[in-house]
Image (cartoon, rainbow, N blue to C red; front, side, top):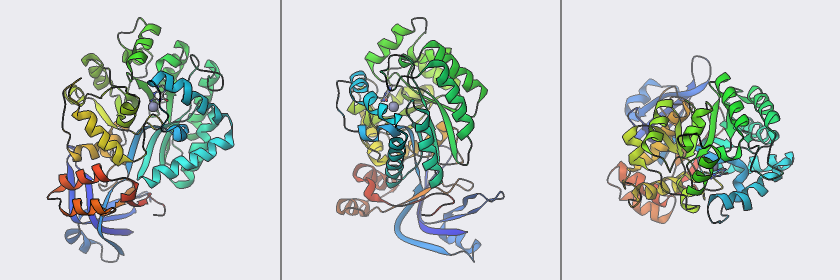
Length: 428
Ligand code: GUN
Ligand code: ZN
């Protein structure tokens, strides 16, 4: 067993934050021998229960759950910062040509390693990531994640039409490959597989039907895709599937909305779409830096909470501009605040942080597993230095409550704040 003494941030079931200024986190094997959080709470109350356990004291530091990135593209690590006149030209001019390079297995392995380095440097310990349409891009990600002991979920992109040579796949083979990858990787240690239709416009009906059949055969496998990101894209999807009630309902028609189905963006929705998300248990990956960079629009938090569907935060790199959860949380604040196209809300820092940790875990169906530091959770956590920069030191020293402290970190923080990352069962 190991114990860590520092300030401690966790989340309660009702989304509220729990904070101990002098906290203790005890990590050790559970009944099955898996390393988990054994106890978390105030130091004075807990320490006497663990007399023989060495306690590492980290004065002035904050222990917090490792962040979860609910939607990212590992092959787009080098696409960050590619400007375009919106989503569709961006895909055509930068993203598809870049992803075609992943036909080279060694290249895919190299980028997977850089991607995981970036996640970890930024305090992200779990991600739901797209690979490319090349099946070995999944092997590259999974092999490297396994080596590092990370809880990682990914999948081969399905895109059998409206895609250039080099990334377009073939309907039948793409489904055979997906099934083989599920068998190879899903449930291997901490790894999970996600069935990954890129978005409805890039998939034939036969491919979407096949994806839905696989999703029904493997209910604990994840599904990931994009929906209602950009107005041009919405128009195109409606043209291609004229019988569907809305863009989102295309996925419903093919059996692709259910628990463990995560849809990036969910911007151009009406209340029927929101109710469909709620009723099917699907969740939104809110991707604010991407939506601001590509000029896609603003996720409607008021609508989401009024109807009541699940959501969490995502970088959506390379449409997104940063791997840093701090940058993503700040962008989510801007997006929620926008009040010209939808109701503007001022989200609390606790709620922003929850969306990138416990809320994202709930969206994945992994609450109680990752994204929190409650007893029984896997011990993926970050050690944060609230004095990492001179301005942060001034601001956090003056913070009068938890909200002010977390807001300072969200507005001024980045990878410099993340001093250490601890992966359950692994080295710090
Ligand atoms: N829609 C289809 N593919 C993509 C992608 O790679 N990134 C984003 N942001 N949207 C998409
Ligand atoms: Zn995306």
